[in-house]
Length: 198
Image (cartoon, rainbow, N blue to C red; front, side, top):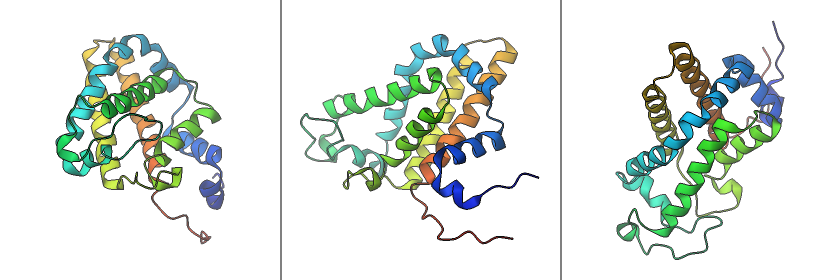
C-alpha cells in the first residue's frame, strides 16, 4: 500500500497531478494516443469551439460571464447580456483561447509545465487569478466540462479510427478531462487546515 501525503496533495501541484494520473491510470500510452490523433482531430477544433459557445449562449447563467472585460482583451465590451451576440469581438477573443486550449491538450507533453497550465485553466475562472469580476460558479464549470467531454467523444467517434485506436483515444481524453476537472474544482474548495490521519 502506498502512503500518500494528503496535506502535500493540497500544496504541491506536481505531487497532486502525478497522484491523480497514477490513480486514474493516465500514462504515457494515453499521451501517445492523444498525440497520434492530433492531426485528425485538430481540424475539428473550430466546430468543437462553436458547439461549446452555442451551448453557453443558451443560458443566462453561462452567457453573463462574457459581459465583463476579459483578461488580455482590449476591445469594446458589450453593454449588457442582450447586446452580446455571437459575432461580438470579445467572443472571438474567447473562442481563440478555447481553440488553443484544445490544441494544447492534443499536442503538448504532459510534464510539470502542462500540470501548471491545466491548473491555471481552473484558476482563471475564479477571482484567485486576479480578475475580481470573473467568478464563474463551479456548477457552470462542471456543466461546461461535461459538455466538452461529450462533444470531444462524439468527434473522436466520427473520425472512423481503427477500433483499438478509437478506444484508447476516448479513454485517454476521458482520464485527462477528469484530471482537468480536479484542477478546476480545487480552486473552489477551501483547502483543509489539517487532514485528520486515520
